[in-house]
Image 1 (spheres, rainbow, N blue to C red):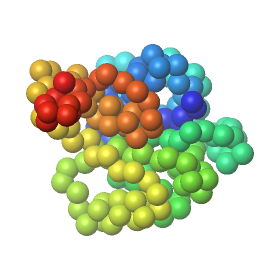
Image 2 (cartoon, one colour; image 1 turned 45 degrees about the vertical axis):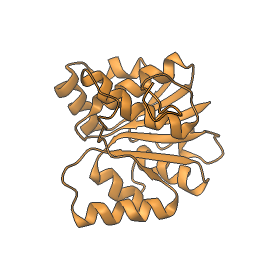
Image 3 (cartoon, rainbow, N blue to C red; image 1 turned 45 degrees about the horizontal axis):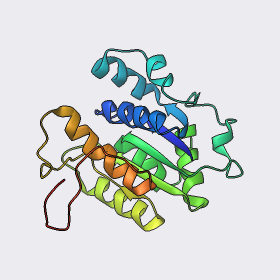
Image 4 (cartoon, one colour; image 1 turned 90 degrees about the vertical axis):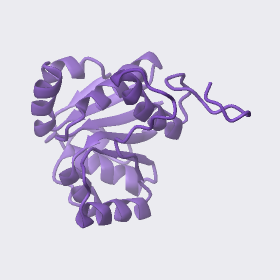
Length: 189
């Protein structure tokens, strides 16, 4: 499996880091783009340099590198995840404004009918955000707000993060044991 992963300038970069860690464990080939704003959030929230996150990916690209293979539909991938996805990035994708590699790669995913999963981390959403999410859903993208559930009785922050990462893995068809599953007798196991 080959995936494009992007980290943009929204709070919650820990979700992107954890997804990359799990995909590495699962031996999924990853192509990473970190926006300039995402780089600043990584430094602020995680206290590490962008290069530490890039080490988790098989390949990484600069945000303005439109000559990267992932900018072309002829480069096969199994989809793209933008985690976290800023509302600026959401708007750019929704309206076909492909000014950088993240936006172009998302456009490629949509036009090639590949999976595109967006994880916005904003609260509350305004009408423009919601319209952009509806627009993207109608185009085939999947929106997973970074809003973890609590029915699995999380014990710590990592359990909450794994819930969202697990939802993404489910959509990509990647088996995992990050969170409990409902059993036939309506219990989480």
